[in-house]
Each structure stands twice: as C-alpha cells, then as structure tokens.
Length: 176
Image (tube, rainbow, N blue to C red; front, side):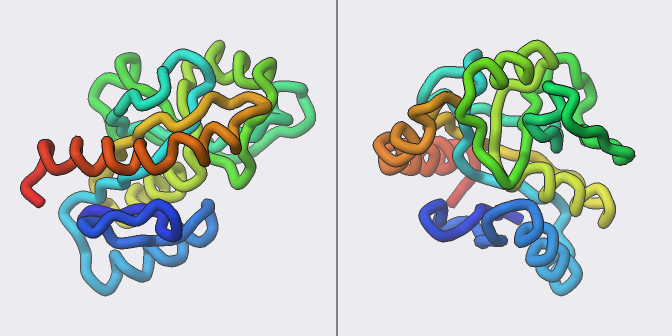
C-alpha cells in the first residue's frame, strides 16, 4: 500500500494519511484495519540535517522520534524512539520525525552526530503503526530543504519540482 501525508503532498498513486505524528497514527491504523496491506510504503519530502543534498531521493526503513531539546538535555523519554525493519541498520538513512521542523543548524549537527540524516514529520508514526500491526514498511523521500533558518522558504521554493521528481522516480520504481 502506497501512502503519503496529504494536503500539498498528495500523489495520485498514494493514499493520504494525514500530516504529523498523531494524524498519521490514527488514520493509518484505521486504514490498515479496514484493508490490511502486505507492505506499507510512505512517499514524501524531507529536510536534510546537512549530509543529503536538495533533490536527493532516499529510501529508508528506519525512523526515529527525537525532539531537539533532547540534545540540550531538556528532556528524556522512557519509550524506544528508534524503529528499523532494515536488515543492516548501519547502512540505513535514519529519518527523524517530530511535529516541529528543525531550523537551527547547530541542533541539526547533533542529529548527524547520531547518524540521523533526514527529517520528515510523519515517518515515525508510519513505522510505529506498521510495527504494532505487524506490517513490513519503508519510505521514499526527496530532500526539499536543509534544516536551517531558511527551511520553510526553501521547502516552498523547491516543493513543486521535488514532487515532480519524486513522482517520476516512483513511476520508474513501480508500475503506476
């Protein structure tokens, strides 16, 4: 089953499941219970913490849910905040999810130091829902921006071309 966030990130070949962690968890759970898929593939955009370039397309089966304040020792969590279905996690691009977009390049460096390279608001919820329901899952992402002070403006200016490139990539990857 191909899924996407929705709103400005819709693809005719994917079912929208919502923006942000909570919306995705609720809507995707409902969708999977009504029509259980063999595999979930999330398609969307991502911000780069610095190692991936604009318009790079990355496939991943590993997600994290780490908030920026974790790196300044402003919080802790009792939950397991990294999920992976990859056979070799050391070769994986880990995608972090939060309901907030990182705009501080100094904080972005902390993610890179922890081998987390991308940011997407929905992927952790996709992976957690899939884990709970016993469904294999992964994601395909295109980089639209860096996680810096220009993140939102760059996202907006690169979004249309990114959607076109990601659609073309998916057409070549699967028969649409």
